[in-house]
Length: 446
Image 1: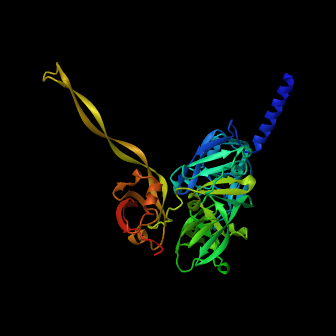
Image 2 (image 1 turned 30 degrees about the vertical axis):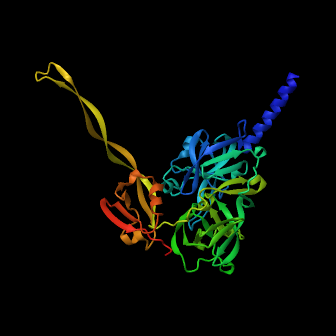
Image 3 (image 1 turned 90 degrees about the vertical axis):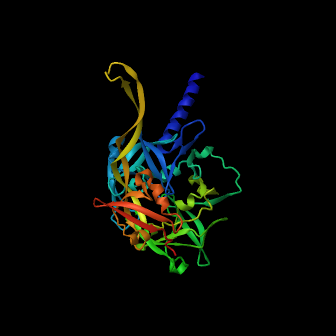
């Protein structure tokens, strides 16, 4: 009898082990785990452990295999072995990017583990998200995690809940909307409706959690998807194959079944930069982070559906950058900081022999500490900052009288999205010279 029981247990363990090698599996009694994430510029940054090394990855529904940005030679610590070389193509007008494929890596996200994960290591130093976001980002993960588990994204409380599909239970939810997913090249699409110039237009949108904008649409005059005359030209973001530029505007509304978002931001990327994205001929654009963060989302790829539940961000106003400045983290520098400390001094008689007590006083000294440097990397032509005289590569020293290093990168950028008319004072360093500039924020669509 004991041998029989042991044999059954062994078979169960062997089956579980083989299953977990080729899939993400939550390995705890609940078969579900909660993982906190950072929300930076509408993007989800989640902790990922690879081969025992703790890293941070962007959760991007628009990618298939995990990508490792190996600009710091992270692969040396991960002890990964390259098996072959491939070339990846993404948004932008640049050339294809060389990547090295690595097999049999151990991935761990919370209690979710996969023992046999392949990834693609990219060595191009220009593909580095950390300077743009101000926090370390070592790579991107998407389909391989989402296909194996039910993934809840709680944008309002900033955590993921990862659950083995057989154990996930849906709760009755009158404030939720279910959408059927369609997949093309392992990327998820849903159907929605946009109102443009009083015309309701059905659209098929890629769900792109790796984009920080609200909505991208591909212009199609025959279908009425066009910017009209009310737009401004701007930098839209970075793709694997380079920068992307295009028009920014607003549309009347976006309808996601019963949910209606009024006056959402929309970007119309130039066709030159999106040739790769338009391989799926039925695709009309992308639904990205500035819309997704207004919901708590359940991705259930095995049932080919996604569930949206509106959260406290739903009615937030859609805003544009009213300065024209895009900043990035540009290294660190030593900054002298003062510090006060309590000191003691012994009081003695004039002959120096008899102790008369101690005198306590405050002393001030200085220390050198490393602080982040923020530099202008994009500057919209004819924007308030452009007209004031600011230039690309200017290093920001202070914002409204406070040292720039007292702020996070995200906090400074948030200031540029505030109400039109707000006065901004910047002190910058240019070629070793300190310069001061002033401008008021202006709505670029007015």
